[in-house]
Image (cartoon, rainbow, N blue to C red):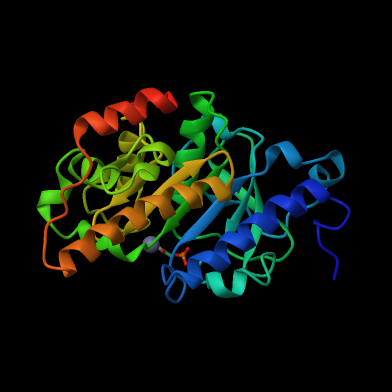
Amino acid sequence: MESILNDRPALRRQIGQVAEVAGYLWQKGWAERNGGNITLNITESVDDALRALPAISEPRPIGTTLPHLEGCWFYCKGTGKRMRDLAREPMACGSVIRILPGCTHYEIVADEPVAPTSELPAHLAVHDYLLAKGSPYRACLHTHPIELVALSHSPRWLEKDAATRMLWSMIPETRAFCPRGLGIVPYLMPSSQALAEATIRALDEDYDVVMWEKHGVLAVDTDILNAFDQVDVLNKAAQIYVSARNMGFEPDGMTDAQMTELRDAFGLPK
Ligand code: 13P
Ligand code: ZN
């Protein structure tokens, strides 16, 4: 079948990474049914031939104006599509869209007219925010990691940085590889503009991963593998906490001094 990935090795590699991560999300049990979504800013891989392609959808409203997305292109998981299917067929379970001049509408360009994820308002707002601040991050992942979502059901872990400190203290790798911790977004309606705006506010407090209370997490990074890794190390820490509690005790956690030592040794941002 004719695909825009044919003869575009850079784009094929990027979408291949999305498919790889989609498989991991399913294997981990974080992607029930159509749960979770991925978007990738692929603008740097777009060539003149791609730019010349006609749209395969009518212009669709973004719901707001996102001025930093002028000229941008994205790969988006399709709404209602399953990660386990996307792992095999990323271009049948997602589509490539471009933002139209004025940044109020987008249109689908390839390969098939698959409607983008219902969380597009949050994803596009995040990409707009990242570009506005000159960030090199191009990937955005939303997923439903079991133990992290479970934590968000207790007010104890919704206090600013309470979950961050506990998770960092479970194993040194979490401190090193999710060095900005876990921001908190209070419960809001999925897919809403309010959720998009609250997500930006939380990321702007200097987090790469934020918890959508009683729903899931949203993570950003340079590419989708790195975004996945940040969620994976955080959820691993949550699993260690759960294991200790299941063994009948509250885990001690590393001390503040031990975590400060790690921060200094690794040159961590916080
Ligand atoms: P979509 O199938 O629309 O991507 O929605 C999945 C989801 O997790 C919504 O929060
Ligand atoms: Zn979700």
